[in-house]
Image (cartoon, rainbow, N blue to C red; front, side, top):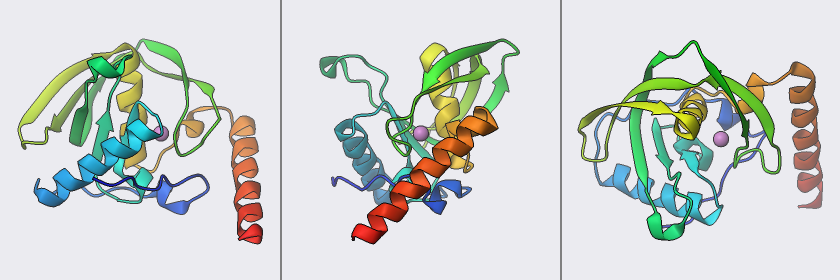
Length: 173
Ligand code: NI
């Protein structure tokens, strides 16, 4: 396992449409292990492979509140097959957009289909934080960020802030 660097806005790779995993093999398992290590260290509750620069449709998640009750979950090639009309508002953040939190409205419930790490097809209903988190992470696989769901004014302000910070970091390097 290795700790990987999390890529940050405005890194263009965050806008990639990621490729499905063709075969679950040692490389996939190593990627997942690195993603968990990186997510727990951050710390965060969900991470998409593209956030460590790998354009693959792989998500890791752990929504448990306590370390002793860790509930690591892996979603390979996930698809949202149904979304409720009813929506919920959650304050979202993202490890690739540090220190920014904004309310995002999304369907309250979704149905998902994915492969687990053993390659078994899984179908599940998600609601609450799980529904929000899986939608946020599936968005990453399609190059969509949570700030794309907020007002244009707020989004542009955030993008500008991160572009400035990146420029400053480059000058200092
Ligand atoms: Ni995110």
